[in-house]
Length: 394
Image (cartoon, rainbow, N blue to C red; front, side, top):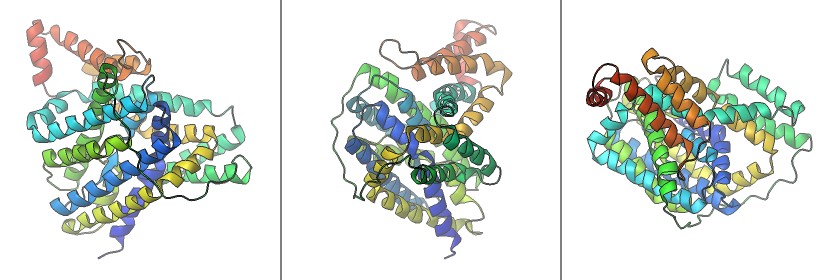
């Protein structure tokens, strides 16, 4: 076995974990999770990713890599007014919807009918706040923040995947050496904490449904596209269904949904891993091993994040989502015919609107789809406009 197989797997795991853990921490803080519950969240989601990646890669003999939903975590972090119990209830509902999507093929086709421009407008509205907040950290500590921003944009010219990780590690080291960090926490092994779910209309429509749609549109469909681009022919249903099942199993311990990876998968599926496509599936077990290690020490990692300067955490979260924001905006504004609908979805989502206890991501998607349908009415009757929306390729 070539050394490139475990190396690629470990690089993908480290980049995926270190580059976006700050967003998971922000999501846990937004729903009022305690330190113990946050550690359980990280541990449970790492275990879910490890088991589903190992199983799917071995079963399909393809490099099927899973990840947590970074846009989904950003959605949770941007929400307000939800408790950790309501969040767990939403995670269970979103996981159940993923399982149903895997079992019922028309559901996958239905989600794929949502125009990429409108879905991307909603996604851009979710993550733009993080990018703005990252810029706002400059006045709070310019001597720490400005060099890190410069390093990020310089490093990403040569290695975009490692740029956020370098900022996190370099920023943490700089904060420690300059006395911005107190005493480091003692190492501790992770434990799982059971959290009782709470189900509410606001939680289902404000968290669960948008989380499901974001996970499907921006993660699972992209993950499938990465596998196909590498020359594989995955069956979508079983892959999505398995990630949904593990999402249900891990949700009671605080974990948000997991899904097929895109960026991490790209690191594990290319010819640099192995010239023989039939050998690349072996990256899956090594990737799973890395996440088992992360799960074991999740409590310590969360504790380290807790003592870092808040401005550094906000900066890392914002920089980690810059690529997602750029890509979402590019897709949202690409099609002239969908541009107004996508812009509407972006504005409503970014506004933070809460109506009837339901958050802005849901209303942003609804508003974008309504505008798109209204524009289609110019070409025929209301009924024809609805039919054209669901039947015309997006």
